[in-house]
Amino acid sequence: YLLYGTRIGVSTMKKITIDCKNVSKTFSTHGYVQALKSITFSAHENEMILLMGPSGSGKTTLIQIIGGLLTQDTGECLVLDTHVNSPP
Image 1 (tube, rainbow, N blue to C red):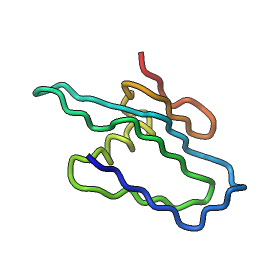
Image 2 (image 1 turned 90 degrees about the horizontal axis):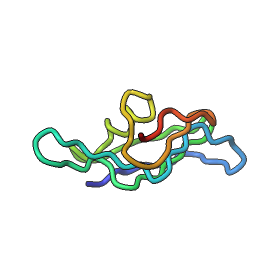
Image 3 (image 1 turned 180 degrees about the horizontal axis):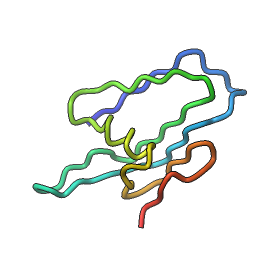
């Protein structure tokens, strides 16, 4: 599965508002499906981000982890320097 991101007008001096490192998530409802595998992603203040990929590539899963609705299996996700959730 692929997860694509694009950056528009990034300045290296802007504060990182979303920072995900080595995030993985596997679902085990009907067999095992790895939705995310070691995703590292960051977004800077006032930056516009586009997540793009085919159906089932993990876009919604990543957004739900960033929003605190799902817990990742591995890695960490911070929003405004605060851990959103962490694996057990």
